[in-house]
Length: 280
Image 1 (cartoon, rainbow, N blue to C red):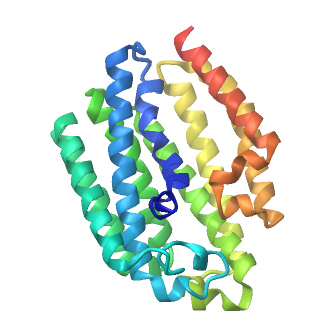
Image 2 (cartoon, rainbow, N blue to C red):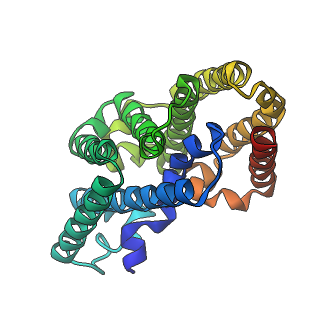
C-alpha cells in the first residue's frame, strides 16, 4: 500500500537523469554511476512527495474518478495525516541527499518541488501552461544529472527532452478525453479547454519538432553517427502516436509501455545501438 502511495511505478520518469551520463560519453566508472544512481533516488523521493501532496489536494475529485478512486488516499486506506508525515520525511531525505551530492542539484530539487506545487495548486487548470510546466520538470530531471557529474550537455539534448515530454503530455490529455468523454471537465478542469482536434494538432506539432530536434542533435553532436539511430527513433515515435489514435491505456499510463512488444523492442534496440555508437 505504501508503494502505491509513493507511486513507485512513476519513478521511471526520473530515468532521464542518466541522459548526461550516457550521451556525454563519460567513462562508465563506478563513481559516476554511483553518483547518478544516488541522484536518481533523491529525485524519486521528491517525486513521491509531490504525488502525495497532489493526492491530498485532489482527494475529492479523485474519489469520483474511474481509475484514481482506487489510490490509497481517496480510497481511505491511508489517512491524510499519515500521508503528510510520510511526505515530510521523503522531502527531507531527498533534500539532505541532494545537498551532499551537489549544491546545484539541491537547488534543482527545490525548484522541482516548488514548480510541482505551483502546478498542483493552480497552473494545472491553465490550458497549455499545464503541459509546458510538466515538460519543464522533465528538463530539470535531465539537467540535474549533468550538475551531479559536473559536465555540459548539448542544448539540443535538453530540447529533445522537453519536446518528448510535451508529446507524451499531449497524448495523455487526448487519452483523458477519450476515457472520460463528457465528464472530462468534472475530473480535470483544464480538459474543458482541450478537445480531440486540439490534442491531435498538439501531437502532430510536437512530434515534428521532436524529430527535427533529434536529427539536429544527432548530426551536430560529437557523435554524428547517432544519425543512424533516426529510423529507430522514428518508428518508436510513430508507434506511440499510433497508440494514441487507438485510445490505448499506454498513453494514459506510459509505465505500461511493456504491454506493447513492438514499441518495447524498438526502445531496447535504440538504447543498444546508441550505446554502441557512443562507446564503441
